[in-house]
Image (cartoon, rainbow, N blue to C red; front, side, top):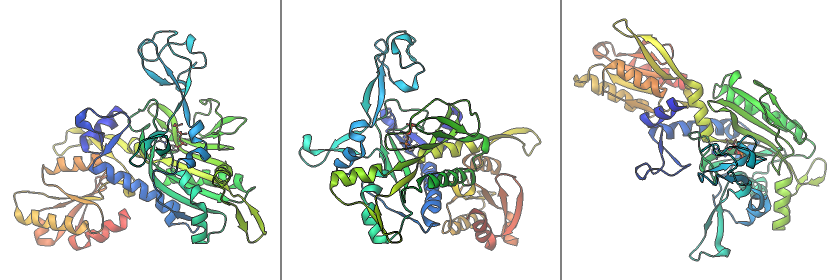
Length: 457
Ligand code: ATP
């Protein structure tokens, strides 16, 4: 993890939030490469979940919602984690993350090591509070949303009526969520501000188990095919009210859990992070909990009339929900390689390469002139880069020797490097070098855009 953290900072993927003021815990800023990777992840998800489907549509809702939303959803009363503090060193911990937390008087503080100093765990609400309007009083309190899902329930009726969708259908959304996590950390794994990509799939009651299994498979495939995650690094934790078990690697390594209050069962997808197996996506069978709760509190009818069976019912919901940051971290950890390669003079040297799937790579191509003191080469390379930019993220660089420029692009995962050399002026061909095989081919400069376009699509 330290290697990835330092690469992210050094190459401009991620910076500490408010860096010059010493940062602020749980908030991060994404730099020029980070914003591209994030956008590519979001695009890949949207493509699979909305663009390529007939049965799912998207929305983009406000972050601040009427506080009654959070009363109905149960967040105001129960969106809590267990907090314990150490009376000696004053450190705070999420109690359920400490082994033996049920009897705090018997265990040592994970920070200072003193025994018997941890306080009995108490509920801590993770909602961030703010006030709306010019007067800050009880009546103006609102919350920053802790999940994007509720907007899909609250707007379910409007979306269903305007799109005339019939069950089963889904509503998807990507956007910021906020949780005042007791302990943030493991780099960007647990943040206080993060982005979620969630989809609520509305189904006929009685069909939810079938759809729950369908979405488990679909989402697992997405991680394997789009993110290229290997089979040994991903598994499913099945959380049912009566038992918890693993499908996939390390099946013995699991603690018993209960599904969340709104769910009759969860499939949690877990990735093998350096700190151990941890959740990257939750696929919850949310029953009609949310729609019923909103119908009750708002007094609005949120039932669905089934034309075929002439029945009226409140739909059940299956929800795949994931965070962009955890996916970002998976992309880096999964594709980071250190390879030994032969340098020009025959010595062995280390090459760091991010073997991202092309669709995720921040830049698809980088263009260099072989000699930066030859204006004709510089001009030809700049023109080519400018032309490529009309189709894809591409960059021009002439700030080092060619070997160094290749290494820099390898380290940020650019699939193709293109070099303009003296011969290019005569034969109008350039050298295209493949990130993974490091093989080089000569391609006519007029063909480069098409050649790359085919491959990086
Ligand atoms: P955890 O058990 O790790 O706290 P959770 O079960 O509370 O996660 P969900 O409420 O199911 O998480 O949220 C869905 C997804 O949102 C998670 O799988 C994760 O990818 C992402 N997510 C949740 N909390 C955070 C956070 N604090 N920082 C970054 N991503 C998060």
